[in-house]
Image (cartoon, rainbow, N blue to C red):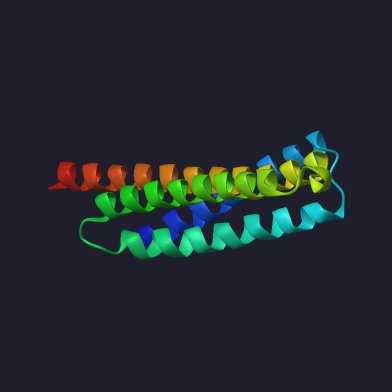
Length: 138
């Protein structure tokens, strides 16, 4: 039951963190309707991270798996960000829209990165706290 409540709390906290980052980016960049995509991906990443971290907590060596999962997810979003920035720079000079492309790139990467970081930190901390309580009780 502890794993379920850990995942539920991490879902709410990481969703809140990702939503706040997306909201602040939308306000800072004066975003329009195109930022709906950013909020949708933020929710999708929150759901996917919750499922992945929930499954990772069920294994015997959960702290190691959670650390690897968090590291791989962070690397994935950094690579996605670099790929999107590279794609923006690969456009012909006359068709580049710096004001329109880079805020969306930041919006697609930064909220999702914040979501994964908060989820990873919360799950790792709760798992470590549970193992310390089990050792003290034994």
